[in-house]
Length: 335
Image (cartoon, rainbow, N blue to C red; front, top):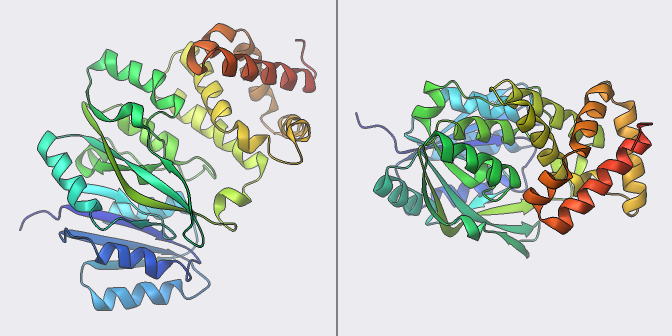
């Protein structure tokens, strides 16, 4: 029996108002060789029943009902059940363009790529267009050896030039299983980063498609709107530690912490203006049970102003460095 081409993993939790649109976008695909693995993560609304109805209608759909364990655990459950050649992650309040699978398959098979990336469209709950996530500078293919892969990870990936979100990529299941890559279930925020980073360590051929294939819904009640500053800091901590265990040297560890802090700075500084945001972040850093870790990372990052300017540009690098100095001062550290 031939291998199924795609396994589409859809974690589901309390999304009864969005789920049908998501699943209908899969059924509307012009390419039909796929399986859909729905993981009902203990939904309290009608989401589980909706999953059951689609399973009854279409034998390509499967559902696993489980106790609530979070997004990372749900995705891991899907990976354990998947049999497809390629893995696609689709969030249950998002949807795919109808040509998505056909275009992904054609591109991936033509170039024998290990990972493919594509553009996305950000929309609101009423499907009003907000903006595009294109990463146009990266369109095309890359062939890596060990040195060029390392340059890509530090000069492009950690600067968010290719996207960290797993939903914007298609993965080869063989690589995932061979290297036992899974989501860290302890991470409450930014769980995509260590998964994608770890996967990229084994990639030799990568392609970025110019097509917008994914519609990414921004909901007022979505996880990204509810996460506390402390959860973001803990996410940074876990990602830093997870990737540190992959053999990164000291300089890379510091710049990794800086990259995470830089990427999440807009969220971390949210609130009633920038000043209140910085004070809120200072307070969160001081109260963190891992304050010593953050203090040491900030201290070492402060002495890398030139590296920050090289990574983020002179103006942004200087602004980020000033923020680091202010955070240090707020934690009672010498600046």
